[in-house]
Length: 370
Image 1 (cartoon, rainbow, N blue to C red):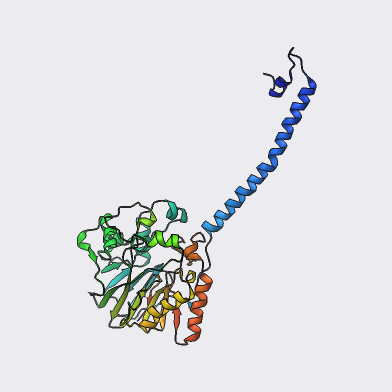
Image 2: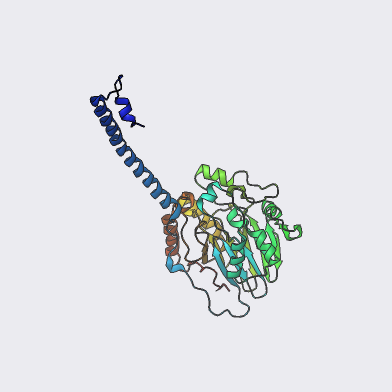
């Protein structure tokens, strides 16, 4: 078969017109040459998009805490001590040697793309590994502080594996029902009603979630807060509605503490709940205004009277669950931005009050609280 350019160069009598052939070949060469800059530009654009994707989806913002605040686990635990173990976010395990209970119990981790557009479900192997790393197989109660996935998603499976009561809002109860947890193991909290588990007296106090400053994020994360029917995963991350957020006040013969896992507050809501230690959530705090930060501090730390502040919910939701803690992935700008502002705010508080002590906990290692 003759070449395409040669066929076009034939005269009507079938002979070759060499001038036409030269022109056709020159035109084809020019077209090929004109495509090269376009292809090169397209390549540079794709390379740029790839680099941006890696930067935003696979790198983490700086942590908003001072490494000097980190404490190590205690090698020796005196009998009868109240201890705490930290997994990350606001998953905390408390134990006095007789009774153990857990906040949140979240061990699953997902990449940012799954959280933004995919469907998620509890990771049973991660839950099994997380409980093992915390050296716990029996719990009296597991309490999600609200019903977002990073607090409540794994809690029903944790309750199944440890014999715990699942305690929280009606939305959290529907997460438990959707996972098939026995109704007898589900308990809906009553605002300010003290509950006794061993020597621990736990009081759940209705509060507010952190108010995201971005209107679109606030609408998606906090609007329409109730989960009104059993939630059966896999579902989208935002199908885990916020429900009713709680602060948790804890009394024990050895001491008292307050857990405010989300950096939100109800004005006057914690009045009368004094504490020796505050577990203070600071996720996203730097994205808010200076007035908001001051109000949050006043309504939690100042109101409790505590000078010992354990910082929680400052690490990545999408980071690894082993090894060093990281800041949030950069794509989650509503959480990862403001790290410098958060740290500056905390350092200023510490500079003004010489008695104030900040601590960040190690992952999984047992630390004596009282």
